[in-house]
Each structure stands twice: as C-alpha cells, then as structure tokens.
Length: 293
Ligand code: SPV
Ligand code: MG
Image (cartoon, rainbow, N blue to C red):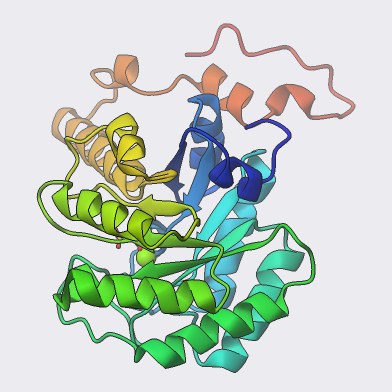
C-alpha cells in the first residue's frame, strides 16, 4: 500500500494484513515481513509491561508505545484505544493526541470501563447511544481528512447476538465511524460470514475488519471473499516472543551456557543491522559487524 493512506487502502480493492506488534523492533520486523499495517494492540502492549489487558495502563503509556512503533517503521498504525480511556471528553483529547502524534487510526470498542480483554469473559457492553456519541465526538475532534475512527463491536463476544451487532453497526456508522471491526470468539468464521452477508444487504459501504484469533484456520483471502477489508493478527507476535524467550531462558539456565541456543537466536550482526547501527555517526571509524555471531 505504498503511498496510499490507510483510508484509501481499506476502501480499495483487496484486503490488508494488519499485524499486532508491541514495540519499535517488532514493528520493524513486521514491515520487513511484508505486512500492510500495524495493530498497536492493548494486549501486546500491556503484556510488554507485564500487566493484564484490563485497562490498567494509562492512555499516555499506550500512546507512547504506538508512537514507538510509528517511529520505527513506515507502516500505518491502527491503535487499539480500548473503550476510549474514559468519557467523551477523554475520547476527544485522545483523538487529538493520537492524530497529532502521526497515528493513522484509533479503534474504540463498545465496552464499559474498565474493559477486559475480549477473551476473558465478564463483558459489560456500553449503551449503544452513548457509544455512538463517543464515535461522533471522536470524528469531530480530528483535524485532517485521513485519520480514521474504527468502531469495534463486542456484541458477539458479550453474547447479545447478531441482530444486536448489526443494529449497533448501523448506529455507529451513522455516527461517523470510518470502519467497523466485528469481533468474534467463535471457533470458526461463520459468524463473520453471516455478519458480512447481512451487512452487505443494508447497502452500506464501509470497510469491515476482524480478528481471527479463535478461528485461525481461515485465511485472510477467505475472509476477504466474505467481505472483510482488514484482517488483524492481534497477538501472535507477543505470543511468539514470549515462547521464544521462555525456551532460551530454560536452555541457558539448564546448561549454564548459551552454546545450545546460539544457532536459534538472532545474531548480533542482524540486531545491529535491524537497529541501524551502520548509520550511527561518530569519531570512531565503524569496523562493521561481519565477524560477530
Ligand atoms: C488486543 O490485541 O488488545 C485486542 C484484540 O483488543 S483481542 O485481544 O483479540 O481482543
Ligand atoms: Mg485490546
């Protein structure tokens, strides 16, 4: 999607593969791997601080993490803004700060504060009209044409059903939402298919996104064929990093040596290259890193 805004890309043909990352390094790796956009997700960022994804970090901490990813790569950043971090006044300030920081989109979910991760149960949905007001206030707060406000539907997570999801989607679209994220925790993509089909019948044209965590066997192409424009792989990167670190720590602790893991971990040369060490200016002539592991 080189040169295009996130808005153009989501409204254009095809689909975007959006990957959840939690810091500058993982965002850089995602860009190199060919993903189209970054999901600055609450779960991944919270995990990187070792706190629960339960509205515990401040907006400033989430924004700082998103900016760290923005500075590290050229991909558009879709920031997970939980339930907006507060009431409509907080939402307004949140949009102003995120837009000014160069973030491309915020995604706000229709759950009550304090929200919990959607896979943890105990969900209280926000009253639909108050959430629609948050969307309207968010849209009125942005200053440029490109910034996007994505409304995330939690009806299928909270168990209030497809009709509720569709009714809310219409309300949020009327309030100005630039895209709709339909969240599901079903083990297959049939809920997503049904939502897309019934949404299409409304004649409304707005990009749809989804998060295939529990229905992981479906491909992004299959979801796109159902009508999805953005597929968010929200938490695989933080889970991969966690597993890799556990394995390496176990091995070093067990053998009192890192020799067994050396061939499985990134070389120092790669790490220097990834982090731009070759571009560092200074008085000492740079020797290169070719002979480092
Ligand atoms: C996140 O990544 O923080 C999300 C997506 O909100 S999910 O964990 O699937 O709810
Ligand atoms: Mg989240």
